[in-house]
Image (cartoon, rainbow, N blue to C red; front, top):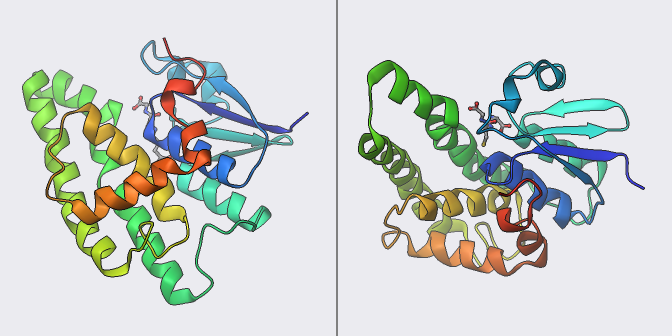
Length: 213
Ligand SMILES: N[C@@H](CCC(=O)N[C@@H](CS)C(=O)NCC(=O)O)C(=O)O
């Protein structure tokens, strides 16, 4: 029996990155699907867990945590082995910068609510929304490519799986889903390819998540 419950949506990148971290740490957890397409994130019961109406939420023994990157850092502090951050402060800063490039500068611009606002407020059609998505992934991946070429090894930073890989894999999944060309990012794609071979990452794949139609 576990006291960890992850509320998430099968295809959400933030839920996916949290599942990866939970799996890397070898933790058992229950999953409670939240259907973003039907708007379950706006229901009163869910807003009581996360007033932002976003997934994921991690319940841990009665405590409620939101914001996937903060959840992963909490997991890192509570369950340090295996580590998701390098031992030295320089390395930690670089890994966090890689993760934040995804978490702060790519993902939020392509979130469901932003895409809905583009369509509803500005009348953007599917083609325009796909161009928007591609634009921000391309922008962030161009920077990440250079960072990974400089600091990467088997994974995005060196030869150990880190917080950066937790964030990178779901963003590549999203890029592929929206057919964003990825040939210009060989170092990034090599790191993502190795990360995808990790059993913890494979077990976190959206196709295996509850709630998938
Ligand atoms: N910064 C937040 C972002 C959470 C977020 O945007 N989640 C998306 C799914 S990936 C969501 O719940 N979207 C629902 C909506 O936009 O209505 C985190 O990392 O947890």
